[in-house]
Amino acid sequence: MTRLQWTRLLSDYRCPRPGNEPRPSREEPFRSAFEADYDRIVYSAAFRRLARKMQVYPTSPHDHIHNRLTHSIEVASVGRSFGKRMADLLLRRGELPADRTAEDVCQILQAACLAHDIGNPPFGHGGEYAVRQWVRDHKELVFGHDGEAVDDGLRRDWLIFEGNAQGFRLAARADNPQAGYMRLTFATLGAMVKYPWHSCDSRALMQQKFNVFSSEQELFEQTWTHMDLGTGADARRHPLSFLSEAADDICYRILDLEDAVDMNILDDAAVRPVLLQILGSENSDLPLSVLRGQAIHTLVNATWEIFETDYEAIMHGQRTADLKTNLAESLADALEQVAAHYTTIFAHRSKVTTELGAYQALGRIVGAMSQATLQLTERGSYRDTDFLAKRCLMLAWGEAYVTDNEHRPYAWWLHQVMDYFAGLTDNHAAQLSQQISGT
Image: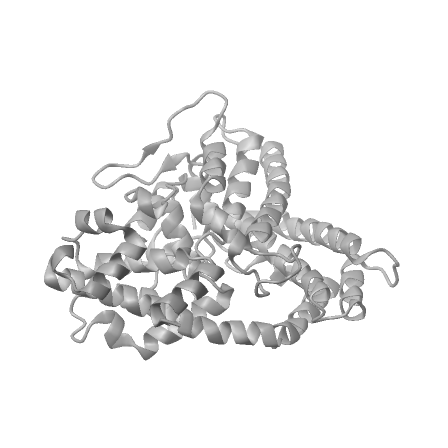
């Protein structure tokens, strides 16, 4: 494989609006395109709503338990640390493009990390599984009796719904301001994408992981082609995506344990030995929070060493596995112990009951909104829909938006339903479900 080039990988181009070609970001004094990415994320409604979306644990009386927002901020902090190391590496090797700065590299990684969970639905990963199962159980309700209006790509988008793909949709598109699409730079999009394939790719079905819905396939291919990352089976990962993925892995594995202690799901005696093993220490009376910080620092250094050692393989597209697969035996064993603790965490009553409720809550919302939009497209106008459909459409999008788009096909509306339910907070989803059911 040919070697990737940073002049292409650090592109400040943005996805085009419909009918246009990609073009560079507008130059602004005192603010780079990558700073603008960070600002677009921070000021977005989708980012703010992460404050009311669970990380692992359902809404807790402890205000300091992590939610998706605090988790994302912490991941971005680790991403910045990786960015400084990456910029230093490029400078030492003479590979930093003349029109880019070390600060640009940091900002790209920080923005990508900040947005990495932006597409996650309510109720965490349990929400993803719940939607997939509900749609499988109610295919006719979502896709219609004949299914002719829904192609295989859109079916697959729903049947293996992926928060990562919803995140790419929000981050890349530019055609619907009401949906909160951000139109981030190609470089930031590249650093976000862990699974560079779409929902109809065989890898999506096998791994239940992908980063691109059928509706964004063209945008994705345009972005990847511009950065010389290839398309289809030849699509490669952007080098910075290995670091954004590592930042997420490090944060959630360590901080979820600390939360488990605060929630009395695990005790200090179960978690402390894991952190000490990461630190290579046998005993410490330091508070768990201090050990946690030291453990994160240790894992950042160890992961960076793997990246730097494997740098040429990454730049030639010869590595696909995440960086933690090459951690030293003692660190890998410690992370296996973390994984073992997840069995206890995920079996906790509050977690199980929340995930059971997610199936009914999200199912009611998806069912009501998909039926309302199906009726809209079958009858041709908002005015001709019945009372309940009107109320659902008004609740989700407002009358003006619906009438402006009533000519759209059902396939288009199904992705609007996806934007709507995925953007709900845990609280709003639970409340809305109760209102729809009349309870």
